[in-house]
Length: 429
Length: 177
Image (cartoon, rainbow over all chains, first blue to last red; front, side, top):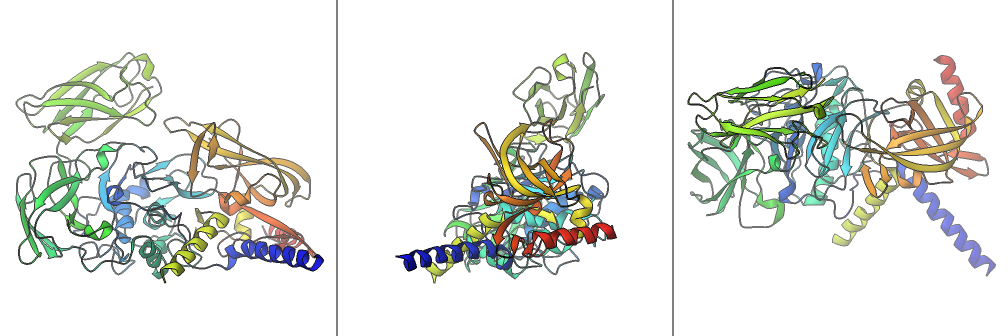
């Protein structure tokens, strides 16, 4: 009995010691849990951009990444790196050969801008001010119903690249790591992998996922299926109502779906829903599709094809650059010019919201988005007012700032006939 | 083969629970010392949570640890608090990838915690567990003394080391500093 007891205790200690020692000796990817993965309805991601200075000063647009610059572009590339195939021709990041290296049945869908941090399931990357306590960024879990990523914006010297980052911290590298969490990965014990727990130097090396990261995303979603559709080119008239042709491979004979970026910019769920062009037939043995773009509601940036025969992640193609002009504002493609007479008003002061280049003689709605649902203009549902644009496509709307708005900051925009304006920040004294 | 894959997954998930998850900068011991004002070796005597909503932000939940023991920077006995983001407060949970593993901060654990000053974390918090999961290390008693369990490459305590040796290393690095 004594020997049995000793053996048992010894075994327990040995097992315990093994667990205790494992973190420093273990290698390889880890996952957040067996059910932590994103279905096709959770592939969208957006960025609420509050970075300033070197964190948001890249103004050079790259043809493979149309309509986005600054920190937005860094976020887009970070997500695209996990994609099933190269994004477009894979170019646009001199620090890695090809952007789009996951080779799994998985691709994110870049939905562009958000104007708030969103809820914990809204798939928005945003930032937070104040002390970081030594943490660069974090993801909120669980992720299977959506996620939220926060960067400690003011605690670090962030850099948006897009080239070599020699000082500060590279947004794209850290984003690639956090987005790895968002798709279901934990940390890897393999030094040099994107999902390694700590970043070295500027973190630029994290931009490019490594073999262990690829093994991780393939473990969760499966290695890329041979039947996954792929896009090689988009040609045609990329304007509202225009006709375009998408060429590639693996399209269904009929009822393909085209995913475009929604032009709705919000800090909640609605802005993350892609615009779908349904029931698109292919020709040439699933290599070509010609169809008409919607008259409104979409914007340029990225396009995906979703085939209808197959299962799960293999249905959705990699992302492909789409330099269309849908009139939306999720990217750098603003058409409605929205302004406010005073961005730092006092309570009791009348301020005027104005816009031009709107669709003429259409109903407009002036809305706000905030993070805590505090009242602004005494409304709780986000709608401040509405009216009709004039024959020249202009609108003006005046309102007195109520006392209840004191000390609040809101982000205002106007929505007209399916199009959103740019967003303006109003901070009440 | 499929069974093997799931066993590997289970093992790797267990590792995550053991090791936590974060995006932190790589810190050697010297860098950690330069960013913190104390490193306390002692017992976690209290674990509580609080919620705070910064201006124009959502509610944030923090876990606050009370550690009673020796400050390895000064040799003084002390009782201190250190917080990290994440936890469950009044039925609401905030789970973030920067949190230490639950096994790291259980009540009664013997740990080494590196503490740094923070601002804007609410009225109850003025110090954090620096780098969150990267700033707390469990210890175990061995025949040769109390050993701090390192967390691997990139962490301030990367390998297992006796507390006495860690204290010596800290002293040397403080002199260099």
